[in-house]
Picture (cartoon, one colour):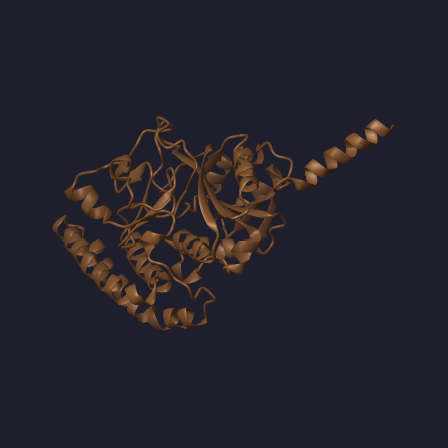
Length: 363
């Protein structure tokens, strides 16, 4: 009897000390994705996790299907479509566990994907955000565009990934199988400590879509925590479910949100110069769209600039009120690239991460 009691105490201690996870999936009229990908999420092999569906007022029967087929999934029914940022922020308030995982509705996970993440969290209390390895659901041997093997940011604020730079996506042959600190983790599969997420006031909702995870990770690093890539945890992302790469609205979000993100997080002494430089580079990108016959994308860049100007009062208010008063140059932050990724890729023709790595990337 004593041995049974002691074993029970050991088992209870292990259970209580385990990392726990609240997996949040935001969805809007994507029943087809839920039917395809939710079964893998609910088949996760871990003792302490929950799955939450944040339903953005879908009209395709998504909530009903999940309720009937996966009754253990908690459903948060929202009164309207709040997008990625708003939907996740509202659902996060209902999370019960230590860590929140924001998972896109078109992500397939592997059965033991949480175990390496748990080990990484246990290994370093400074780690607040983790991204698993993200492979393509369409081409399973290759990395996926949105996140790949961890996100980085160049001196001008352009994001790129290990395994994906602009349109060059690499095959995964183990070249990025080393765990490493990164600048940002992809919102397709984003693990963040619940207390830290709430301390940061969650995602910045005016972004709506795109750049919100980079902004969050930047703020978390400025608060003294770390963002890491976990290669032993593997997921598969379909991608492109919300807006296609050439969609003018996606162009608008990317250009507007990037400027807002830079203005929110750059040190004051770099702010004006960096913003002016980005506006010039954006102008070049706009004319590239025009020369390619993409007139709507050309217009989207300038719409993004006007929307940024309109947003400046809110940026000033944030910078004055934010507790993150100590801001650092991009190159001095983990995952910051002190050079131009555009120059490295298009001029020097270094098309893969391994060709551009060096002392200019902090890590």
